Amino acid sequence: MNIEGIEMEVRCTGDVCSDALEFLRRHNHEKTAEHSIRVKKAAEELAKRFHVPAQKAGIAGIMHDISGVIPNEKRIAAAEALGIDILPEERIFPMIIHQKLSKVMARDLFQVADQDILDAIECHTTLKKNPSQLDLVLFSADKIEWDQTGTPPYIKELCEALEISLEHGAFVYIQYLWKQKDKLKVVHPWLKDAYYHLKAIIEA
Image 1 (cartoon, helix red, strand yellow):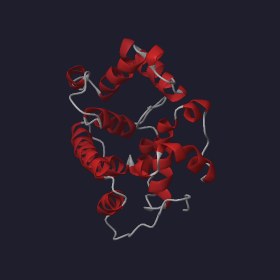
Image 2 (image 1 turned 90 degrees about the vertical axis):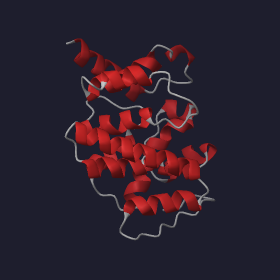
Image 3 (image 1 turned 180 degrees about the vertical axis):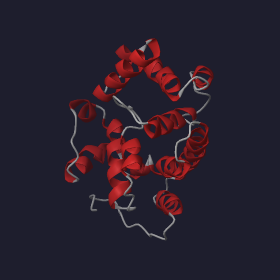
Image 4 (image 1 turned 90 degrees about the horizontal axis):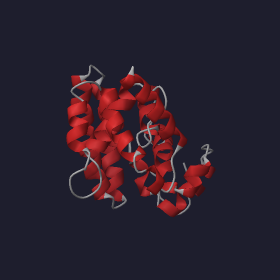
């Protein structure tokens, strides 16, 4: 894999989680590494609770933001170079495409071949229609262990909703965004699909 201006060599040891953390730290992304460790732990805990393979959840958690090494202003060019389908909303707000970039990097750089893991990484920011249980685990873990300062304003409601189901938990965050959608730079179509999909499940 070649992305202009970014060294993409991976020192594979057979331990994909250690390799990912070493890669992030080598690119001076310690904050992303620490966030990924927290998401890995949260994803594994949720996976065990909801009978989802914890090893898959852990790998997805550690890999979900691996494309953070690509500066925001280079993400669209990187996605184009890698043949990734780019939606208009992603061109307007390139931060969102990091989920697709992370999927490709996990697959092509770190040799992650499990499609369930790759699919979860690909939608961890927006979710999507008909998400798998692993998709929901990673999505929720990432929102529990968000990468901003302070306490997430939705965290109490999200954790309470997880007492019901993964779908209820994920919907709390989706609805949190939906209520302020007029203030968002874009409403990603996958997020919109996820909102109506989960809303139908919860209201059934």
